[in-house]
Image (cartoon, rainbow, N blue to C red):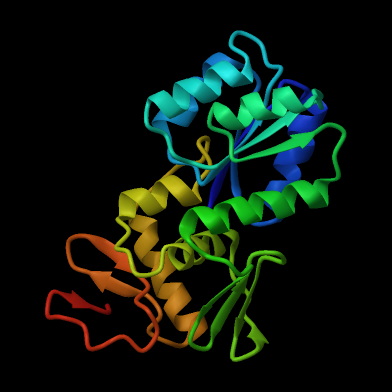
Length: 231
């Protein structure tokens, strides 16, 4: 799962980036509205943390630009403005949630997890597939109640697929959502991560769809058609 942080205060931008990275997310960050408008429109993000008071184009302008361009990712607004009409304006412009500064990092993380769950159609903070449980709060994965040690990229890939159970996800989409922008992306490594996950989880949780990508079928679903098969 990949997050965009738009914040012009360098210390806060660094703190957010570090906290999100530690929680298992791939993180891109920028400090002004011009860069934010471009990144949010052209790169795939699972959520955005957007400060309202940024240079070149304020957060409200950037948010309207994204929504007019058809960008649908959840957006959490950060601002020092706590007047009710400022909050209403932000929500009406297309924001999904609103948090005033100063804030507690744990609350921001909880709100962000909730936004991404709702965006993917999940109500619980735990994503479950048969014997596999992924806890979005602790970034832990369990198999039959036992913890499974995953690398950061393995966790992001599994998390993205579990958030989108029942849908075929292409290698390109997975690459966009598990790597930060400054990382040397290689879609060929997706197959490697999938193989490792299958071995570590010791089950057929991830299905290969020939020529299209990967998916996690609903647990116990009927036999797959001929064109869909596990590797």
